[in-house]
Image (cartoon, rainbow, N blue to C red; front, side, top):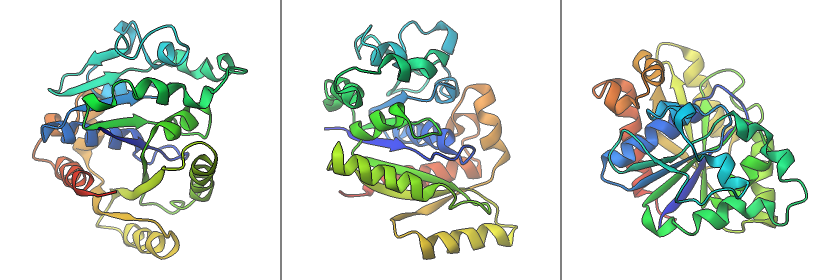
Length: 254
């Protein structure tokens, strides 16, 4: 049965979608069967995996509103073994459409359960906010990976995210765990990056991945080409970082 991992941080610009794209691609590179579910209305994970958002007929919006099946909403990516449930801007209004619907927190879970056995990993890219989309993702997920940028306000908002995860665990998904924190945009040339890592390790009592994703020009360029880093620049520091993270994720036991 596939492992469902939500990538979440309510703070924007921390490398959340970059992690979803490149972790998924590096897992597929290791011959894992991977499904990426884009739950962010911006749809950056969709385009970052080489899919034109405007050409996709069935997206996560249609899936959540019940107008399509999970099988119909899947789109092949440019990577062998990696399938995507795409997102577009329509998803931004789904919260209003779901008001009053019974068990609306379980819509995604009920659909994912139908295909879970077909994949080794299901990666959900959450929006940078704590809303119905994020709750659906966490109700579906087994674990949550929290990307943290190596900058001054790294811990800002994390207490709210952990509170939400605890709330979901208490009321909706008792098996949900924080898989780990992954540091992103690490700049070895600055003392600040090192201080942030040490500060988080001292104050955040959660599992922390050994892999630290470096700040990397090629990593920043890759999405504009619709490619994950392991295809855009396979020998870059960014590609090495996400391959290392994929290895840790594969070997982590729960």
